[in-house]
Amino acid sequence: MKLTLATKIIADIPTSNGCLYTRDVLEGVIKQFNIRAHKRPVLGSELKPDDISHLGEPAFVTHRLFINESGAVCADIEILDNESGKSLQNKIGANSNVIARPIMCVPSYVNIEKKHQIAERGDDVLVIHKINSIVRIQVECHGEPTGSNKENDVGGAK
Image 1 (cartoon, rainbow, N blue to C red):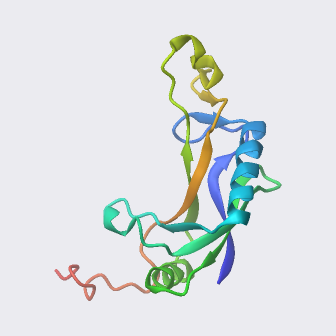
Image 2 (cartoon, rainbow, N blue to C red):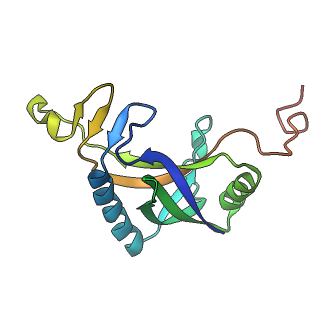
């Protein structure tokens, strides 16, 4: 199953945690990611904040990233035909609140004088000037899939 998912990162608009990524910075790091993805598969998994044991189980391949007409960073993914992929596909099919989340490597700075080359504080935002790379994409499913019966789920009995 192939699909396109949007992230919550929109060029030149602050994120919910107050970071602003300029279009130029995003376009550069997306270009690097796409070159890497063309050479070898970039595997991703479902983001499960309560259960990090599934972090290494690939559920999909990210084929490319791009910025859509609204300025949002988007990912073209293909779900794998394995247990993790089937589980993710079922959640996506039953849940309309699904987003992709890029895992980025932003450089830290040791020399305080060079800090402005990486990021600078603006009016209630942190403008990011440099991203080393987008490592991979995680998929996040929010809420319970429709048709879920919590009382019959394992561990959900009351």
